[in-house]
Length: 520
Length: 94
Image 1 (spheres, rainbow over the protein chains, first blue to last red):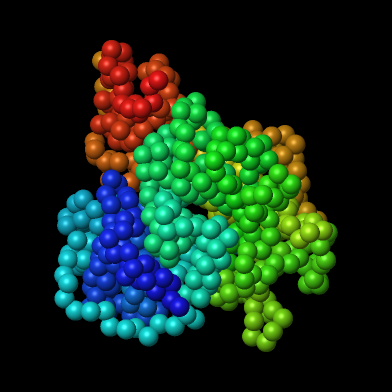
Image 2 (image 1 turned 180 degrees about the vertical axis):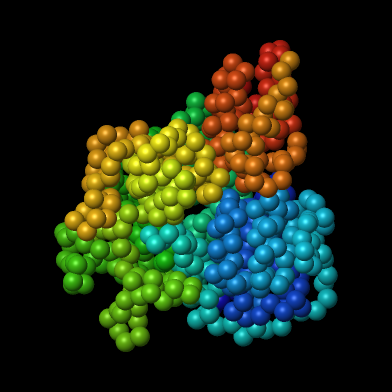
């Protein structure tokens, strides 16, 4: 079974059903099927082959969805890239993955124009959106409209099997450079099957997705819905939460997937109580555990909905989920392994630990990634031999406690990754930018607890003599070079930073101190 | 009446665009261009409230009011005029 086969089956069975509602437009399964087939033909004609990378640098849109299935149909690997990505990072991703095709939108021109001009790949650029026909580009390009206009020819079978890579999703790593997580068709089909099984998604469901499709749980809303011919209402962002509520009411949304930041924003709304949302039957939370207080508030606000608390990593998509009936019993738990997946804890020597212990979480299953694109060293740190010959299991690098009945409680990351707004923030990536400020002598970035963001990014700076910056100046400098979720919320200036015996900045001490003294 | 659009253009350009890329056009959606995200919208709201001494209730926190320079200008003018209501959710009023 290939990832797009699930969608093709739905398109054959329910051609006239609405698959996607986006920007006040409805697209049926047959329409998405036809558009992606046409785009696939164009890709093949342009020489995009099995195993090639297709970069999708697009906002949440029908074009993104069509691009995903078109790439899969020609045996290529799709790479969804967050539309907020700044030119420096986009340049890195394109250099790292060398896609042969990029599909993007005219509204993002300022982000990709210069990058494409100096990159050697991709050879094919397809541009959607208003003004795409006038895009300033040194090399030939196609408009999305032209690329999906012709109905001539059929997609010739690329010979894909389920061991082939279906997607590469870039994620931040502790080393600073983003890492491309390679996921096979088998990985993604397995994860989609397991998750939709335990959630109990139905064909009649309408799922509201305001998570970016470049974020794996956003992407899976499409993959899972299209597997069972459900409908997705796609929104570009959660920036206007009242608009989202209004849409949920109008579209009779039954499933709402979110991250803790979204739920915090919802709870801060005065007008929330006006929205009854009687059809809402399921709320799912991922990225980070919800604070217990928020769990209670969500249950009070939406008593009609079952709440699933979950935990996952891009490297295997989903790790655990807590069945809603367990919420009252163990609200602090992120649950247990999902169907067709085994999870267990190990000590520092790799020995398996019994329930009741604390240790590093290991994941075993068909959902575990194939590695990081072009990074065998990084891959070897995460993927280690499993119980059977040739098998690899995922060492998550996350520290958990397991209770006597096998339920897991997240304790901390073993490295210093910060999770802010559901996004991973690699301190090194932020520190690199801070160090490019002329007056910065030392920079250390840590996460501090934040009720809205989960964790907020805090920068501690030691300045060179004779230099002075305001907090706002530093934040603005970071915003100019990083996606907004990477920029510090707090900046403090200190005379020195704590050091370890080996002279490295002692993040643990710094975090402890920051937690004691709060964000500011 | 203050020149709302010019003022907002310089605020957006200075705080969210950082001189990178082309100037933002009057009708361009901040969200679609990736100029603003959730936190950016909240910053913008605070700035508008302080600058024009207005209060923006959350049921007016809508793209129709805030997602482009044109929208902001029209919205702020309606708020300053007082008499005309801003775009709010149709069903939101009791």
